[in-house]
Length: 251
Image (cartoon, rainbow, N blue to C red; front, side, top):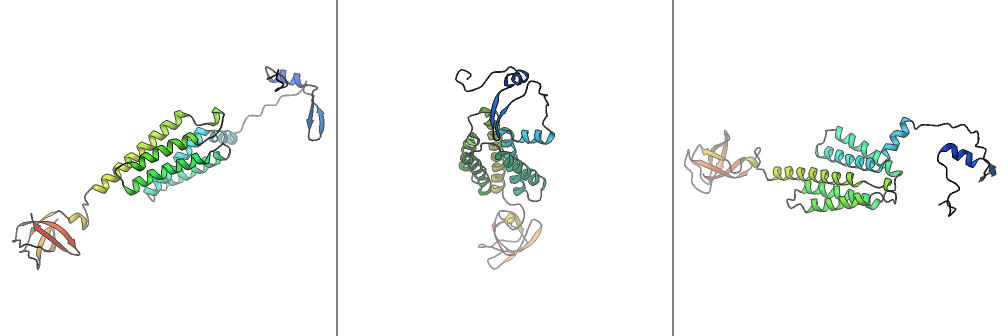
């Protein structure tokens, strides 16, 4: 670099640099100035707490993790309204992440891919689709977005794979488990309310005919009717619930 005249000089430390540039003439906005650095007093100023915190937040890996925590917090709050704490933490993390994005070389196509991945995960949970197609699409979008998020030739301004891979795996596992639980709840037979009566067994308290009768189900007396004649004390199965009347058949 020195031979190619890209740099002015080489110095092994700050003191040698100050001696080397002493007497040099530099161009400034107010004209040429001669540097007088031979006896300059060095004053070191450490970063304060505020700048230290902002410097940590501005690291690409930290900003990425804050963004994910923000999405997780908001998702948990939306699926569990009234929890408050996850929503507050999630919103705070997102604000800090977007602050960091202002000082980082963010590729917004990558950010949109990550948002798309999160939306596909959420839709899989809401729609309760058992095939996992939206989850696969979410994982692909998430990985692409993470790799594209920060566009810089400098390694220190790019995401580390040691952060991206665990983040993708944890996110995928989180939503896969959530989807599995949601699908199990979706397939589970209702145990309360009118829907919970369908398929339940009871005992005819009177003869039951198409015109009507009485039965007891879950310890409760119900008006009932049947397409066939059912004798008193016979066991019956609930086929349908219409208002406050049960349609039953012989067990």
